[in-house]
Length: 300
Ligand code: AMP
Image 1 (cartoon, rainbow, N blue to C red):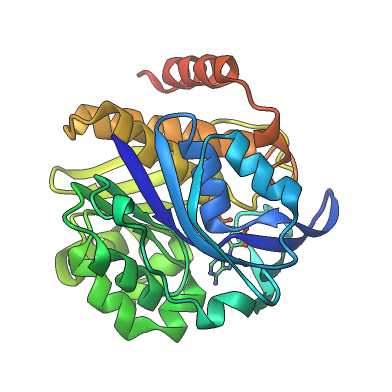
Image 2 (tube, protein in one colour):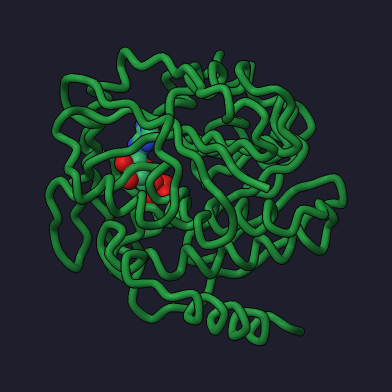
């Protein structure tokens, strides 16, 4: 089994109560593919500028991510700046520069079109649609988005939603997309009226709420006393979750719930340091141990 991801590969400038980092490696597809690579084969479709550092490309290659679909264009790599304050459950976007993404039209390598699992990481929904249209018939199609696109490209997003098995979004985004203030109701309304088979609402330190064909299901976050930088938590949740789903391949409810637990565990590592620094030193044994601890801690 394998996974195709399209999304941003970025340089981020981030401020949290623990410090400031300028132009560090980030991007929805970067976090996702790094995490999913612990579970399955991953191929990445994105564009970077000619400022993209060789060591960042080498890091992704080192994780075994197939970069045949990573195009380099003249210009600057996508740049996002954000700030986290207080409980750090939500990012405040200070600036988004699409740069080389502004003119990017994905043309999938032939071998990518038959990949079984497609993850449309957070990026322009028009681009997400272009990738989905080039795929033969993925067994699982999942998508993440954010307010920037819900507000700026709503029509394209609404066109995409009925074609999804799984939609991931955070609480504020679920409210904005549905027009509902209650998160449970927002998830149910999105599923019933906008088309995705399952809606996974990310609630920061409170974990996730899933609305699917079997009703609701909730999973708490892994308990951490110190969170340094929440950037990428959602994308690494998706990487662990979709990665584990793809590796398991059964598609039943038990496998879905186990995948949610893996996503939760992967997100808990990311937030322990800035950028992808914690993931750069993450060992498989740490994932196994934390997964076991999470299961023990959530058993009732
Ligand atoms: P999250 O998992 O939601 O914390 O995602 C953080 C990553 O999303 C950062 O590394 C950013 O580079 C990236 N990002 C922020 N805004 C956008 C956007 N509008 N489109 C695509 N990626 C974005």
